[in-house]
Length: 439
Image (cartoon, rainbow, N blue to C red; front, side):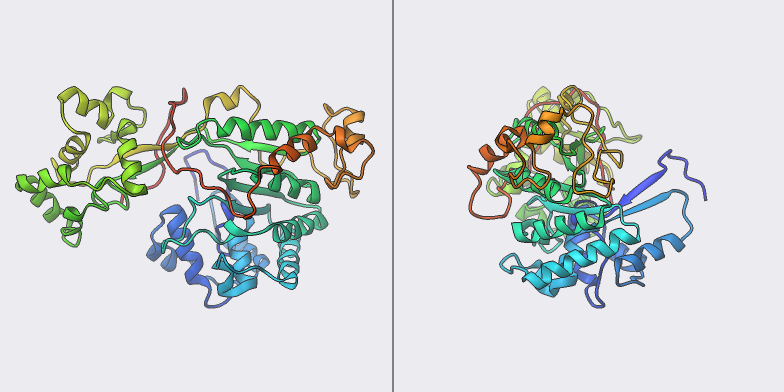
């Protein structure tokens, strides 16, 4: 087998989604969750995965037995772990795991890390939902559960922590506490969103404070922003919730296109009667200035003047009318690419970095972390390895000062504070490309 794309390693299990451990009969929910989070058709997952394993070590054995053209690593996904231990209660955000269930999660994590798992991943974002709309199971995991898993990762003396979070008040402090407890490195996804365009800077400040305290915490950024492919035959498009279009949605694509092309009144209604309320309608209204016709061959780096909004303004038309015309003028199979969330370009200049396995960690067999050389002996003495303030001069620890200020504003709920899932307020200087597939 040969891979021509240059990628040598793929990592499974990011952001708490994955397929092990899994009990017989529990496969459907994991497929439902993956379909919702990654927009991979459930039929493809159901037909392509044989689920010939139950435990995570068995899963690794299956991965290792398959021929492949690149290396594979896997993390223990929190959602699968939670549902394996708690059953259907694992996806119920009103349910709280018992002490015994938390201990079981910990034992399974230790078992997985001993078998070769790369680490443990969790998700604290409301953007991650199953196909049926339910938020990802790990969203509402409380401190006792997270601390118990962190303690287990520390016992294993292996692996790393990974998380995607909305970073509401107290969220980064919660994640960094897992680093304090486990002595293991943490990688968090750093993105810019319209709803809080400066939040990434606050998060980066917290990362810097943790690093100054000798904790292995890094922001993980992508070389290109996250995008969405839209089209009349795709999951998302401007008319996905439009009553006039939904009346045609059952028709084959060619018939839908013919109706839009041939009926002037239908085209008028698609523009004049479009929904204006609800999260999707609001997102679509903001998305036109960074939505582009993909073209054939695809143009992955279009000029801003080619956005749907810019083209509409130039011709004196409504963006929805312009998009409708572009969607239906041929076969309807064309796609639009929307920049959904971006990597703040300034992160490269202000300390965030991509990370895999080389972050300093507690591999020495002691409870004391292996401190980076940049951390002075005075700072090492002032910061407790477990974050409990037991070291001499703990009040001087820069991480503790930052952490305390953030925790003071933390809401009573353990769930993430919602951050609007919307396009960024400012354009990055980096180039971009869409993710996903037009289908």
